[in-house]
Length: 402
Ligand SMILES: Cc1cc2nc3c(=O)[nH]c(=O)nc-3n(C[C@H](O)[C@H](O)[C@H](O)COP(=O)(O)OP(=O)(O)OC[C@H]3O[C@@H](n4cnc5c(N)ncnc54)[C@H](O)[C@@H]3O)c2cc1C
Image (cartoon, rainbow, N blue to C red):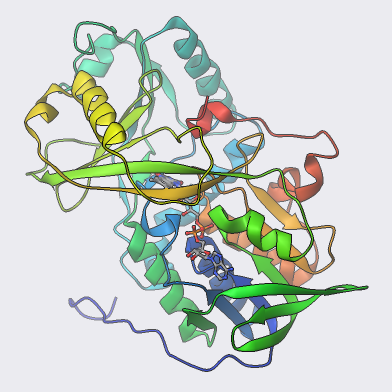
C-alpha cells in the first residue's frame, strides 16, 4: 500500500481503438476481473472493457458482499474454495484495500428438511477441505447470543451449519481495485459506451458495434449479467437464462454488535453488519422477470419482519436505504463460463446470486481459456453447452432460490 492515505483513482479517458485483441462487454466485477487477469497473468494488455453506464452500475455495486465456499455440489465447492483462496490476498494483489473481513457464517434451520440439507452440505464441504460444521441450538447460542432461537416464538431453530471461512468484501472497492489494476496494465475501460451489436461472419465472432462505430476483436466476452440474454441475442444466441430482481436494504449505522453473517434457510433472509456499522439485509430473488431496478415496500416490510424474528434487537434499528439489482438465473443455479457455439464469442454469465464471490476465480480461469484456448478443469463443468448435453450442475439450495 502506498502511504496511509487512500489512493485516489481515476480511470483514464481514451477514445476506443478500431481493434483490440479482446473486447469485454460489461464493466462489473467479472468483466474487470477478466480484464485484469488477461493483462496480469497472460500479458494480453490490448484489452478493452465496454460499459454502457459506469463501472459497478450493475449487480456488482448492489450486492450484499457475501463471500463463502459452502456450496452443495462436487463441481461448485472446489470452484468457490479456489475463489476464497484468491480473496484472502486480493488487496495485496491489486494494491487496493477491498476491506476483506472473515467473521463466519451461520445458516439457521427451522425444519428437519433444511437441517438434512445442511448435514449433507457439511459432509460434502469437509470432503473438499472446506470447513462447514453442523451445530446444535446450544452451540448457536454460544457462537451468536443475539439470535432468538425461537424465531419470535413461532419457528424454533433446530440447528444450523456454521462456516467459519464466511467473509465479506466491500463491493465497490473490489470493482475499483480490479479497474485500477487493469488500467495500470494499459487495459482500456470505456464507460458510457454501450455495445449495440456483435459482429459475426461465417468463421465466428469478429467484433462489436458501438455508437462510436464498429470495433474488431480477436475475441469477445459477454460479462453483462442481467443483460446477458440481450447481448447474446446480438450474436444470434438464445440462452436458458432469465433475469430476476433481487433486493436489499441497510439500516442507519450503529456501533459494531453483529459478528459474521446470520442467515435463515427457511425464512430466506440474511443479515450482516458492514464496516460502516449499517445492518445489511438480503432475501431471495423475486419470482418474476424484469429489467427494472425499482425496489418495493413489500420487500422492505417482509425482510425487516423476518430479520426481527431471528435478531430481535433489529426492531429498534431504522431502515436507511433500499435498492434492487438484476440476477441472470440459470436453470441449475450455476454459472455459465466458456466459449459459445459462435467461435471466439465467450460467456461469463449466469452469475445469478453468486457472481460476486466467484469473480476472482471466474476472471482467472476465463482469462486462461481466452488466452490459451484450453479450458481449466475447474470450469469445465460450467460450459455453455451443458444444457443441451444434459449435464446440469443443480445447486438451487446454495443460491437461495429453492
Ligand atoms: C441485491 C443483490 C445481492 C447480491 N448478493 C450477493 C452476494 O452477497 N454474494 C454474491 O456472490 N453475489 C451476490 N449477488 C450477485 C452478484 O452481485 C452478481 O452476480 C455479480 O455482481 C455480477 O457481476 P457481473 O460483473 O457479472 O455483472 P454486473 O455487475 O451486473 O455488470 C454487468 C454490466 O454490464 C453492463 N452492460 C449491460 N449491457 C451492456 C451493453 N450492451 N454494453 C455495455 N455494457 C453493458 C451493465 O451496465 C453492467 O454494469 C447479489 C446481487 C444482488 C442484486
